[in-house]
Structure formats: C-alpha cells, structure tokens
Image (tube, rainbow, N blue to C red):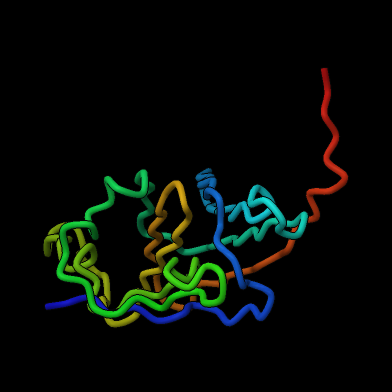
Length: 150
C-alpha cells in the first residue's frame, strides 16, 4: 500500500509555508495552531483548527517523521517562491499509520470512516486521525496585537 496526499482545504490565502505547528490535546478537545505569522513577510495571522472525535494524534520534528522512509507519491506543493515546499494542510489516503493499528486497538472502529490529516511546517509535522462525522472548525487568529507580559 502506498499513501497518497491531497490538499485538505483550499484556503485561498495559504500561499506560503507554515513556520511551526503547535499541537494541543486536552480531554475532549484537540487543536492545532499553524504558525504562518513567523515567516518573514507573511501576514500577521495563524490558523487554528479544532477537532472533535480524535482517535490519535502525533507530532514529529520534520526529518524524524516516518514518512521520510516511505515511498512517497506526489505531494501537493505550494507554488511561487515556495514551489518545492509541501502544502501545509494535507489529507492522507491509504494511511500507513491507520493500517498499523491492530484489530485489538481498533475494535468497533469502522476504518472507512476514519480520516487522516497531516499538517506540514518547516519545523515539524503533525498527524491527526479523526472518526466519523468529526467536526472541524477553523479560525484565522490575528497575531499583530499580541500582548507581551513581563
């Protein structure tokens, strides 16, 4: 089996790379923050995505991610000045990670309803497996008015 990748979302305003991704997990609440604002010349905003129905999530530094050893199919890329960089929001089909779950680990899990999302930055890669009719909410967060406390 070989994984394939497609753009998870077509945010027209995603035209550059993400500097790094913050993964936040709390009971019943999972979110990631794609930090675009840390790229020189980028807009002062980051993308926050919240998930319900998360089965598993993981974060790796970019070059320690297992996909570095996979036979890779074509990965959607950004374009323009960042043409060789991966598009930051991907959906994975034929997921090797999901396939690695044993029958015992996935009792009662209808694998056909599981979706695998991969978020790629210049620093790290975050993977999220969601189940069924998972609700994803997205929000652009303005970082220009951040308050620094001392």
